[in-house]
Image (cartoon, each protein chain N blue to C red):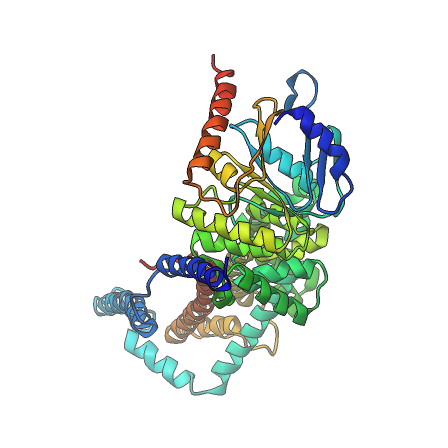
Length: 295
Length: 263
């Protein structure tokens, strides 16, 4: 075959491949910006509506004079208290102390939970021994650990940390365990064909594959840690540490219902904010893995 | 075209790089009276740089055979010889890792072998060029079509730099047009890279289109029924008359084998 003909034949097959590739691609119908706008709107309006309904009902309850105004203040009174309080350093100092405790406890839980999760998933006897114990611990209300924690650690930061970690570890460990259990066998087989063994297989295939499950475990773990922390701060008031829980307990002692509600709203807001962070991480993984479904 | 001829070949090809020689390979699952014999005395010789298609109905143990050659499973009897370990392998599902980009999926094969970062990148780029996916290096697997994903899987297998490539129904889940294209692509790459290919399929025409030799296996247990040498010029077309004629002959033999299991 002359050179020309060979070249032509090569071009034809190349074009055939390229043409089919092009046809197989899903066309992008919307602009990224347009989709973002639509997504923001569809995510926002239900929240706004819910907020309006809650505040509306609260106002109605207040107007019905079901309870005295100093026990159940109006939304406006609470808002004024929140605005004034947020201008003082005490408010932010308390949030700082509480968040610091939460983050320390959570970080420790992630460490312990991950190691525990991998160990349980890896070693059969260990799973038989404590697999169901972990799930059992998860269902235990963390507040019941406090009497023991106080006896063990006295009224101290450690007592709070102890309970926070106990609350969060089972969820994080379970996230990893179920992630490892559900790694598609086809991925492990590819790992084996590529020559991965033991640690290499864990590092390159099994651990990355558990990521979505790990993140949902983290999210749940955070919720448990945050709950345990709030319970702990109400019970274990460490002298000189004006945490959110301590100040809230103080407000109750002074019959300051508006202040108590201010803190409740603050805690709720922080919870929503952290949830948004986890959700963004989850969304990102779904998108890059091709698991999202937006149509 | 008989088994005797295959056995005669064993002596010639053994110990050459890229050659695979199976001698009386037996694979049993389980023990005692409940044991199932998947492969029963399979002898097969695959010359270096040749293209062998393994064909058979369900239960002929063709996928088992590949797993044994790949070393993913242990043999119960007989011997498998191939000079260079490990062999590369591709499956029906591309099984690309979704947390890596297309290039990352190719690079992982190099990384396991201890290839340095810069070299990895260049080599992956080169391999993506080989499978004609140059512009897709930074895409994620889910952004590609099924045929493109299989080409990435092929690039990943090529990154193993093994002279033997095992393919377990790699195009089984693809539409006919994409499969046609991938036949051409595979044939080109096989020739360029001097690979020894063992290709499992249940599609008779596909086997004739691609193979130098087509090995027909019996079912339950798997034995070599016949080896067909395909002496047609390449590139072949799957819809050409000679391919169709040989495919018809093999299909008849396959049907006869399947009928044996009726009732």
